[in-house]
Image 1 (cartoon, rainbow, N blue to C red):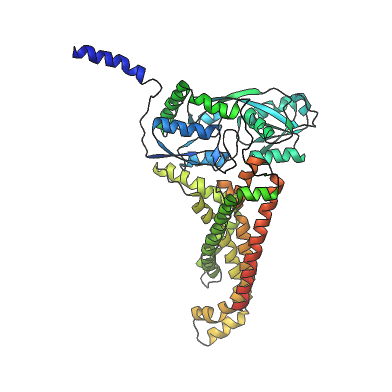
Image 2 (cartoon, rainbow, N blue to C red; image 1 turned 30 degrees about the vertical axis):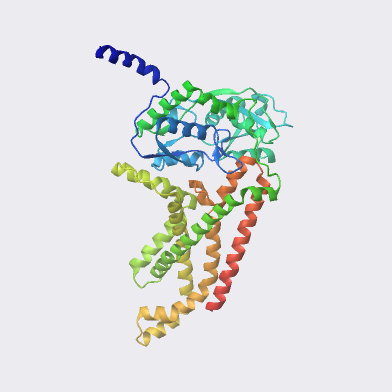
Length: 482
């Protein structure tokens, strides 16, 4: 009798468990990277929260499979690099599956079949691919749309211009810098629903499947959990509800925000918390990195005027190397390159926090210039003073502290102020590694409402006010020291 009951339960178990198949987790929390502006897959809503198909889907799968996630939104290029460098465990960003990407990533089952489509201004006469001859088409870097354009470029004779984000691409189309854009169909149609005066004269072309991905050979359980969770959501109808929420013809993709973001006051009213948060990161980044740069710069500046040739050589190499590398490349090397290099040697992932990486890059960059300011300031003091002091039997160190440096400091102060202003402006470059400071915050807001002119005007005023106030403060400090 017991055997019959057991057999009956074994038959019933698969029926009752249908749609709730689960995989085993390995980590307590998984970091998932995504784009910052790729509506309707991922974008910020009117309350400045990230939403979209990808956001709803990964959260639903995590809940279904019982694992915890932390989502970061550094942008598409930065998200890909974050996964490769070990800063994130997986990426979901409307990412198309291509043969080239299969060499670097392991993909999940497809959750969306993507179409690429051409968008032009409403007044444009372009009606076919043949009409694109000698014209410029914009496309986001690293996308399947870019692959499509590259493969057909010789056939239709157009020029390709790549962009790192969608908002810059659509702005370029509106200003006439490019003649057309190519993007995923739901993305382009979302931009039209948000007020972009565009049209799609050519039917969309299938460009492949969209899937979740992890770095090749890592986190296989995450792919397994995604696939099982996706199957469960499809079985219980939740997946279709997510798609309908953003893609169905009757769905509203326009902002539910009651604040009119077509005005500068409306933009400030609805986004001031986000802008202040970005401003806080910008100021912290500038102040911390500049404080570190002063210490490093003074050390190497002193080395450059040292009587010891070896110290002068070390200073010269440091200044030449750091000043010879563009800041953006330096930041990318520290944030992505070093972790990849360490992993290739040790086999262990050693991710670096984006704020820390940005601080290191800005500190080294500013230190190289400060070292030259210190060298120039010291050498501006008449050499006779050093000679006179040494002839009186005063040591080199004491002469520098008591006689040379006090005079040199007064000469260096204006240059220090200028260098700090430059460091503050340079924080915008660090947004390339996905750090959401003030400039990147503005770009994310623009990606939601396409109010680029007004938002960039707001950002310009923010920087102007902050830099003016800090410059006035520094000049007062300079006067008091003199």
